[in-house]
Amino acid sequence: MKVALIIENSQAAKSSIVHEALTSVAEPLGHEVFHYGMYTAEDDAQLTYVMNGLLAGILLNSKAADFVITGCGTGMGSMLACNSMPGVFCGLVIDPTDAFLFSQINDGNCMSMPYAKGFGWAAELNLQDCYRKILENEGGAGYPKERAEIMRTNRGILKDLKAAACYDMLTVLKNVDQNLLRSAIAGERFAEYFYSNSQDEAISAYLRNL
Image (cartoon, rainbow, N blue to C red):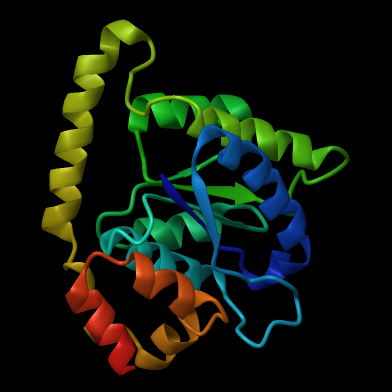
């Protein structure tokens, strides 16, 4: 699985902690991690939590990533921004139980975490445990198991509801503030990672033309 990591500007100083915690779990499980920034608080490309959502929408709808991990101070802002995008189902994950239940019940494709609130001593251990609960299990298996079928049905209904309520991603890209979009894809490794992994030529072509 291709896992994308996005860090917003208020928490960019913790980027290496988050990235190391993620790769230490993901890579032994056979997943590939792509860090789309931010990398330091001084990066030229400054990502806000709103841009996190826009980037998550681009990566998931183009299939450049299979799963997105992001966050902000509380995790709330990034979650809301991500869920405003078509095809993105983002859960707020604070502890390993959240991660396990979100994976098994909701089978989402994006998670947002708090990187300021409650981020204290041994925070990297909580990160590792949360990532492990997301990445080591097959999503959507259900919990409790006897409710797996109704959970699967509800996920399908929610997916259809979101598709009816949202524009497609290319339309979003055309309608969104173009300066905001340019800023969201201005990260130093965006082009390197995105264009080699994107499976949607229309989205890729539109972003190249920017």
